Length: 146
Length: 115
Image (cartoon, rainbow over all chains, first blue to last red; front, side, top):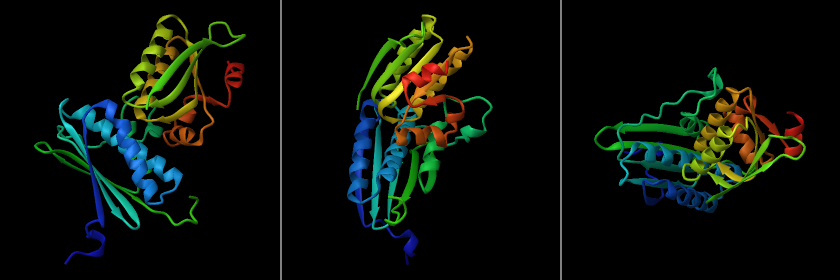
């Protein structure tokens, strides 16, 4: 029996885009449209756009040039779960808190932003299959500053 | 989903260059910003004001370009100041702690006055 926490999402939207920088903006527009349709607030939509774009950027930087990035949006009444998968070589999603660094760092900010902006984040790394990042944003009640 | 990059001299501040950005800064567009900042530093301009007033979106690659520019001008005792009032953009600088690294101002004039 599937527990309520692990039920599959009610609806799923899948995007398959080239692993190229010029397509990241398209992913941002798509996730903004989906989140808007689900009645997320403006700030949460901006968080989702940035988190998905950062995940996409990581895929581009670690996957083959001719590869693709798969973005799976699991839609539930109370949350949006986005899974970003590439065929890269085991990017582990490590990133340190830039606020703790002695010197500002040019790299590693993307992972920190994803972990900060999304409610739940997990990585599944398989050198043969690539990296799968799953991140969830919960729909906040209207009373919570939306 | 594009960026325009314009460079001008700040009136009354000889040598200070303003990089006026308009659009979105991401992995696709940030190389253009990096190139412009790099050229200005190569030309000896070590006090830069980056105007983000018309930037609708910035991600970690854009932040990385700004940090890289800051590191280069610091080698010459220079500065990189930002003009930004967009709450969504300021939020990114807040949560990454970069508000403590960059001077962030409401206008080019106030950024210039602080130099």
